[in-house]
Amino acid sequence: MMIDTILWLLYLAVGSWLVLGGLFFAYPTVYRLKDRRDEFKWIMLVPIFLWLIIGVIADIIFNVFWGSWIFREVPHWSIRWVRWWKIKIPYIKTELFTDRLQRHWYGDSEKQKERAAPWVRRVNIIDPGHV
Image 1 (cartoon, rainbow, N blue to C red):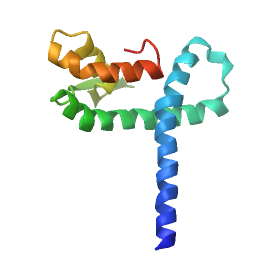
Image 2: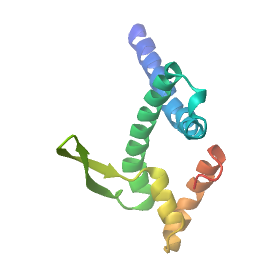
Image 3: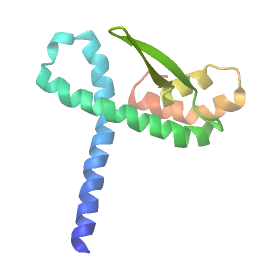
């Protein structure tokens, strides 16, 4: 029983570290990478992009559950096509939570703008000017 509790706490700690690293570390770092590409070596890029992928997955999950509850709508989904060699491959494109925030913050609906206001403040504290 005690070992199970310790293992679950360890699992929670590592999982939280990966998700929070993806949300709060990798995302701003990738934007810095766009400006200074030659500053980071490949050994640093691997964990950064691992955290970024985990952060995007966490953002999509947050958007589907909490975003749908906050804004009283489901996120926009669409099917896009990518060409790889001579094959067209479909993939699902979804809007992230910050995309939805921007859409409602700059949109016409005052009710949706009111629902987005606290989240816009939170996101802009973490990354100023993001929304």
